Image: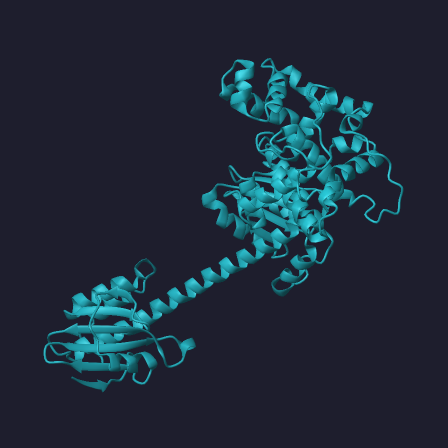
Length: 511
């Protein structure tokens, strides 16, 4: 077998027949840019078997061809740019397809074999085709590189959000500083959630990044396929995002109050709550209302002491473990374990294991909705006000029970006013909601208790959402406020919370 170096794919004599050239150029049109189609065209045009393979021998298009290993190695390494071979039965041409950033080595090799020798026209077609393939493959590589870069950037944004969700603002700022200097330099920010159909989310995320001038953390929500999360310290972000929603059907915007970066998880919950209200608004937008929250109607000193008493079994844990357990549990009480896991970037089994450990340490049962509401109250009190007298230097009043906290006249009046909004509906929404909460939000069990269909229960609970201006079916802060209202009015009995499970090895009695 004999081989010779050739001149390469660029400087070739011109053929007076230009029909093939026009056909080849058609493959550069936007609708025809497919290397496989080019390879098929080449084989048909020169009456040959064609193989396009990468530098490692992987078949990219065409049919596999047996090739001389030594000559192929010379083409791949760049020692020669092309070669013509003859073995008595077939004539083979190999052309290296190079990319400027790779130096002389070939990224791919085009091999063409046919029984007849390659005349000047056939050789010219092969070499010109190699040039077209070079352009198409380079474009594909740039597209793939751009896609990987966008994916890596999106993953980095998500990682920053996940750090903020667990209150690790130092690490979040450190990660953000490299690509978005100054993005998180302020201590406070608002969180917005924009909802659209999953098919439109990527375009909406790009629009959010563009309209905020790159001065916001824009994240495709890992838990909800149609949600885009925007964390922005800039006061103009809300107005800009509203202009994006304006006039777009089935697109909604919910925004939080301004919160410290360490309370990003709280702000996210507020934005989700506002999003539920936005679905009933003509302008399809809403900002979390600075409404009266039940904890503000409780004695602040007693509330803080009670919260500290509830969480005291965790105080013997190392600080980083305690913080991790509490941050995970706060999110786990706001969302499902699956969605909390996606937001945190861990497995759902990890979320459940951490929550099971907290549940055991606190001696509580998170399957009970009233217990979840009470634990949520204790966790959020610490998140807002910080650990209660962590140094033990101030006198600690004996913590009141939850029943005593709920006994204030102001809280009872608030609860009666809130639940009284449901009395105007002839379907007894209030009775259904009370039974649904007592059944731990299980529609089937509620239906059995009330003697109605489960869908009727769901319809009643869903109908109560716009009346109360709170999201109920999705769990979270809104629902827990409604649960506390039922506890304050005496419609439901307060749960037993606080006190460690003495049978657990993590309990202080075993330390």
